[in-house]
Length: 129
Image (tube, rainbow, N blue to C red; front, side, top):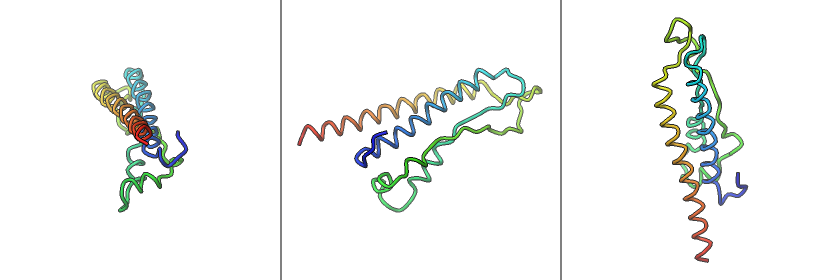
């Protein structure tokens, strides 16, 4: 994390990338436990926290500038703990997990590209001055 308001977009993107990385680990764990009796699917909550953090009537730049990054953390939770798809109590659907994993990987690479683009804009601005 870069400690300057000039890097707030990068810091928020960094937090989102961290959450996506965590989700990748959680989804891989779900896939690994798809046949484990009694295992319950887990997921990561982040997008709602981010949405709440940037909600408001100000401009997006102001909301990002005023965001409290220390409260912007992901949480892992067990999804629908009472639901089971099989008699052994497992609620992991391997097809859904594979789709979610692919979707999350695309999100992660998009976030990495966005971070790179932000640094490139900063470098370009420094070169012109």
